[in-house]
Length: 472
Ligand SMILES: N[C@@H](Cc1ccc(O)cc1)C(=O)O
Image (cartoon, rainbow, N blue to C red; front, side, top):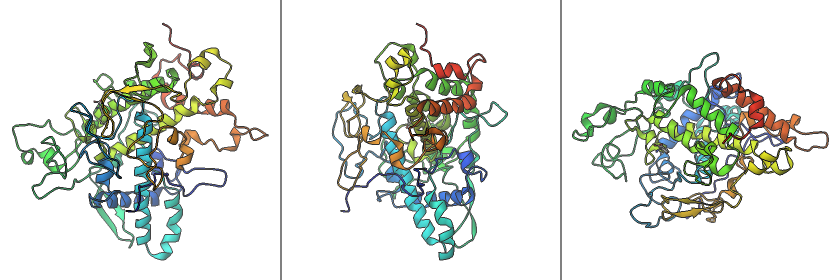
């Protein structure tokens, strides 16, 4: 036994002044004007995804095993043992309606990024020697791209699902130079099936136990007919046009379009305390400002992509198998990181605003919240804190489990985001001291530029900067 898998992030490509490679928004990731490695990184990313999705379902770092941590097939991962918590216990490791929602998913995303990167390094080794040296910087600087579903296309008010997620097939260049059209790993995932044609280890009956691929917005499943006779489920046909429509439907049960953009803006403008920011189930206060959350908005996007007809992305048990999950959660992770930057731990000394000083809660700060559902390793109704183990994620090969404090700073995981380049010289004064107000001002400016258009016109950057409490 080689020990537990250390989740440490990608540590390659970091500059001498702590410049971490960016996790790019997908539209910038593929654009050489923004990403100098765009062309090579896209090719390497697709080849690495193809490789990880094709790995045996028994391997710890396969797509099936990593995706299987979240919900089904409800098995142990990396030696982290499940418990019998009774009939009401949630059977996956993932934490929802829980104060651990943001941090658990942070480490989870770092794991998939690291595992895909390991595959990318294997892909690199397949290239001819002379090509390897030229491609190595692209591999070293690669970080998992995300999709900002609240970012409109320039000059429009349209939210657009990235084409890369919609194309059923896509062209790659093999290490031997040959161009080839492959099944696009960002469009769907093919499940490992047993001899009876059932997905390995899945329970609960059709359609998920028998659908050979992940699907988005499938035709509603008809329980009286076999899966094999229902085309969208049997053949893995996604209706991405329907997902695209849902994404812009402002009045749907899961609001898209301008309504989605407003909710992202409000998330940062109105919520300055980590517990209500973090999840849908915080009841620490009756304050109406706490009736939206990072998790709540994220839930809607799951259903927008998967569909009310319950394609995989819409269902907690199965969402992770669709690569859309990771592009989506990359954005959730970015939103968490932005929240942390805007509500820094040194808030007590800055700014000189009594309301802020009494309102900002940068982290758990001793708070606990009862998790009604529990997880694979915790019984329902457990009080969770910043020290609750984020099973099954390990820091090292010796079995040390992460907790939320242990994953508090993204710098340790070797990535950054466009808005969060805290190493830039402009954020240091002559004595080298970090200029928090200037940094926050730049972040707010970026948020206003991206999402502010959706607000009534009188709501400007200065309002966001002041972040006044809602009137009661
Ligand atoms: N179950 C959530 C959506 C969701 C789906 C999959 C997930 O992994 C997470 C959340 C809802 O209905 O709002």
